[in-house]
Amino acid sequence: MTTQPLSALTMLLSRHTKRREFIALFGGAALFKGMEKIMRRFTLLLLVVLLGGTDRMAGQETVETRGITSVIKIDEVIFGHLTELNGKFKLRATELTFAPDGYVGVHHHVGPGVRYVISGELTFTEGGQETVYKAGEYYFETGNLAHTAQNKANVPLRVLVVEILPKDWTVPAMIAPRSQ
Image (cartoon, rainbow, N blue to C red):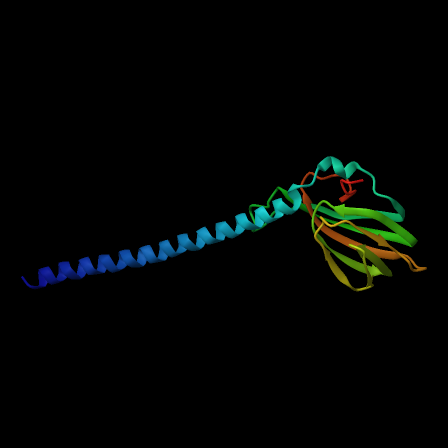
């Protein structure tokens, strides 16, 4: 008779232990999933804040340019592990060629991105500060700060612009500041 209550007690303790392990395992997983969901929402919110103040019609305003040609190399809607971004944004890579003394007037961009100087030297002016980027150098633009770009050298300048844009953006991502 003592084995029966002991067996029942063991079974009860075993069930209790399994329940604790189950709760810890799935409660912990739920907590992890919750944090992951919060981080994804935060990332999406950050992108919306960066891109949200942009009026799509502003993309049709003209920015002064001289001696510039551009070729879009890739324009792909984002699909991947960051599901909150899927189908809402795209990556665009554009190669810009500046002739000697080529110039882009005061402008900003629809979205943030990385720039890579393929060849030549780019004189980048933002907030009154001039920076020269040379072949092989990268730099980042937030998109929301007005600036100019110029090739002051006697040889062509080539720059690769990779940026995040709303998925249905079809016009150039370089836009005139609203004050103009």
